[in-house]
Length: 455
Image (tube, rainbow, N blue to C red; front, side, top):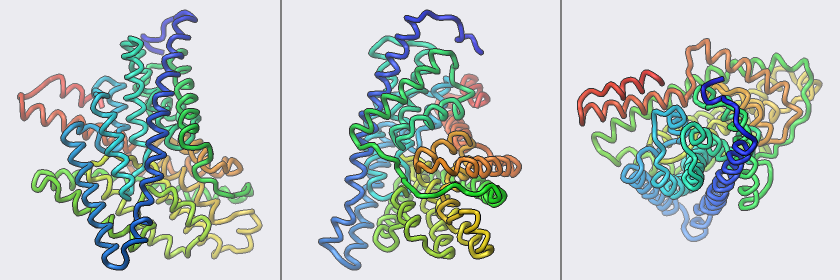
């Protein structure tokens, strides 16, 4: 408990929950239309293919995506630099009091640039922008109703959770995300906790009303036998190592993008956009956020070698797309990468022990589903969120025990290998860069140094 945890009246609790309901509803509006518009815009290569063929199609897609990339990077850098990337570190920093969410700038930039970035085909998820927009929407509600202090920070977290709920139609994962991912910063009291529930409810409801009510990835998988749990634990070991590697590459590529920015500000985004645009025609499964890719490979189930090559390609396109600084998240890219690796793992197991495989009621899709939660746990280090998010996404509740097993081993391996949560690393990097810029402009600042130490 903390200082904010003092008794309050039912009226105070009801008022806070009412404001949280408004914050969630606003988040649902922004998140719902964000989701809907991306679903419409992402079809542009198919429309273009009806009018252009061959090399002209490849060139046209490459040029369009390159132009979209440069536009979104310009828009972000010019009007709201903090709107680049996921937005989750910015929200965590704001809850902690070391960053500021300027919602008047962040909201329009994140909405417009996020739609263009994700809709142009980059390997980015919509959850980062909706989480950031959710926090911004919550601040609109706090300004409307005069909420300040600790309650304002709590509503910021509640709005962010509602943003995750909008992205994946996953309200319970949203509640857990606030409690698990922002556990150091969230000002926990009874009313603030209930506010998270309230925002997740209205955020999900409004978003579903706008963009539809369905599991995002309805995959079929039956209940696996208890004897298969060691196999899922082994899968978690593999993905624990992959998660540490993924995080390291994300951070390294952010530095690469920053280095290019100093030398030629838009050269790196243009190059990445050019390649991603060409891949939309040449190898479409290697790009885009990945939700459709997961559904396709789960049904078609390519060979293990093809899946591993696809995983390698999506690994590279994921970290490259994120390094440009465009608005976009990493949840969806992580899930699609994990699905490829999990399906390949399942096929290897099936080849190694064909009789036992069917006897334990296993399918390659079972491993693909579980892998999504395991890799999420290894990278983000929020295993409870990973388990519930994948259950809500796929409606594969029969795999709860295997999923818990894989998330346990993935989290342990990531910890033992020295891996650290990706969003914590990103926040530290943001604070360090902010401190360096401030010192360059104004000289040493004790305040900024202290903020960096707090991270």
